[in-house]
Length: 226
Image (tube, rainbow, N blue to C red; front, side):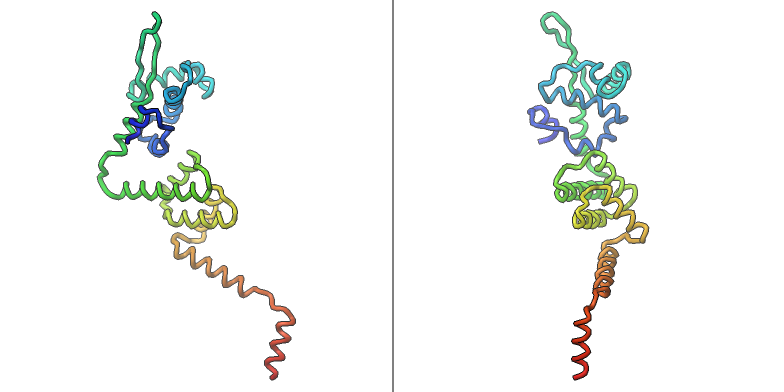
């Protein structure tokens, strides 16, 4: 079942896929934020929202919100319908066109296999993060992880290795994981093999620094005299 069908059946929260693809659908973040208010209204029992309520929540002017609503309708991301109820004209906003566009976007054939593979890698990495951290990632964390892989060209497996090290150290937050990646970058570590070699070097260094007691040295001297 596609997102639009889930929406029509009343069984849908905001799709995670929309966070990854909102820039492919919305012109800017303000459009996305205003659209979410109408999405909330459509999917809950929330009373009609006045532009002034949205403006107050977003610290914008009513004129700004009205302009954004007009922009959303002109882009066919928000349907505006008028109905007559008890002799009065009411305006109803429908947020579902965005979900139809999201469905179309996700079902488009890819020109190459690379973008699909990147999307699968990112999805798998996000699932690993949420499983290890025991919570959903925030939109900011999702954006940072996506930037780390796509813009910084960091191997997803390397990000996983940083995640495992952070969990081992009890520091389960993205800032700590990102700091590990920065340190590795400064040290020229770009592969899992280099991470493993560095770990082995540290273990060898620790083992060579194990203190030897006087009793042990005395026992060894006695043994050598025999």
